[in-house]
Every structure is written in C-alpha cells, then in structure tokens.
Image (cartoon, rainbow, N blue to C red; front, side, top):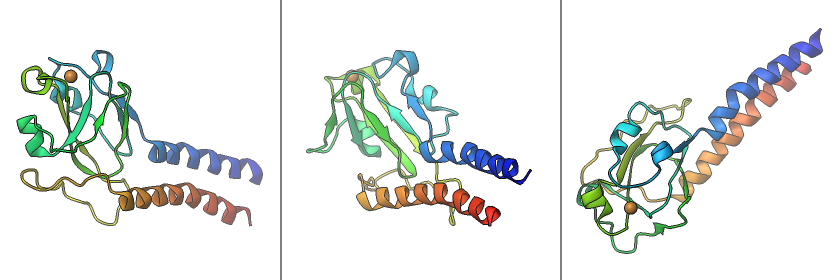
Length: 168
Ligand SMILES: [Cu+2]
C-alpha cells in the first residue's frame, strides 16, 4: 500500500540522515583514555572523523596549532579543558591538534593527538586539507558553527520535504 511505501521512505531517510547529523563519538585512546605513553597516532589511524566528536579523559586538553603540537607549548591564553570528561565537537574540517597541559606529559609522555577532520559528505567543493606548518589554526569560529547547524537542519528537513511531496 501507499502508506507503507511512505513509511519505508521515511524510515530509510532517517537511517541515512541520523549518522550524518549526529556523527560518531570517538573515545580518545579507547580503554586507555587520554594519558601518557600511548600511541595516539596509531589510535587515530584509519578512523574517519566526520561530523564526529571526540571524548577526552583525565588530565587536561589544550587546543594548539601544528607548531604547538611539535613544541608542546600552547599560546598564552589558551583555554584548557579540565573536566576530565570533555567532549570536543569536530565542526570544521582540517587538521586539529591537542596536547596535554599537565607537567611534561606532552614532552616526555608523548600525550598529544593530531587528527584530520574530513569535510562534509555533501559539499559543493572538496576542501583540500589546509597547509600544516605556520598557518594560523582556525580557532573555534561561531560563524562556522552556525553554518554547520544550518546544514544539519537542512539534512533533516530535506527528506521530510521529499516525503511530503510523495504524499501529495
Ligand atoms: Cu597528561
């Protein structure tokens, strides 16, 4: 019947759209968490960070640029995430660098993470990864955040709209 067909369309749309909107939450370091003497490069390898968030464990988290990542030094005034259970939403594509701000954990414990956030699946331009060295890191940008949420609303609204067209 037509009704069951429509329900199937809605159901399929939800299955496709929900992961796009909410993404996946990665627990950094998995069961080891955010700690020293862990290979975060190996952990990040092969993971697709797209519309995702990452959950950091104990210690602190400082968002830095490529230079800060290499030198384990965060610019003065960098806000540390200190709750021990911080979730970072990866709203914009590109390279993201995080280091631990406790003691010498970054320098001697190699407690640092670099990931590449992939662009959105449906994008008019396939954005190349930004240059790594020397380039200023895009700081948390509210305009970009708003753009992302509008996109997400659109992704929810689109299948609803298409379904309504089918119903008419
Ligand atoms: Cu630490």
